[in-house]
Amino acid sequence: MKRSKSSRRWLDEHVNDPYVKKAQKDGLRSRSSYKLVELNEKDKLIRPGMLVMDLGSAPGGWSQVAGGLVGEKGRVIATDILPMDPLDNVDFIQGDFTDDAVFQQILARLDGRQPDLIVSDIAPNISGIAAADQASSMYLVELTLDMVRQVLKPGGNYVVKVFQGEGSDQFLKDVRTSFEKVVIRKPEASRPRSREVYLVGKGFKE
Image 1: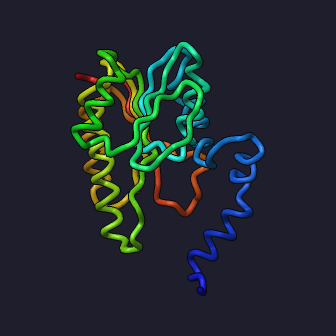
Image 2 (image 1 turned 90 degrees about the horizontal axis):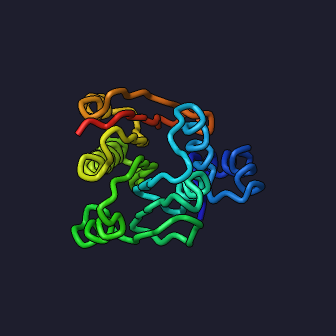
């Protein structure tokens, strides 16, 4: 089977990507781990003892970083429709977090507590049809914001990946209504030609 030019380019980029090599060397699950490391360094998001929620967590790159930072006195509650291997200080729930049965499992795990921080590096399965992929992506990030509004601690923080395009400006406005401050970040580990940016919402307003 011949590979398309774009998949060949991705493979070449991936094999030669310094962050891929660094992740392998550092024992991290994905190159995206470094995005959260950089966001945390800039925005001081995660401290020991915190309760963090990771939506769309597999293969666990962000949960691994967060679990290391919250330490044994903290906890990360991670969820994804895909399976994820165990990690220290991380409770994983497999399933669609918008499904009521899965949401009830998440609430049971929270046990009345409210997360200090909700993060999401979620992305849809890519179809290759740009408009459809953008719509799927915006739908997913809106679902993460719904979760934030249901469970995040007042004054808590939120980090979400957004692909710039149709609906992204409107989503930014919507996030701003729920947070004291919202900044847009483009971590160095984010590929330059990618349309992804990260919104960091600080100071959740109930």
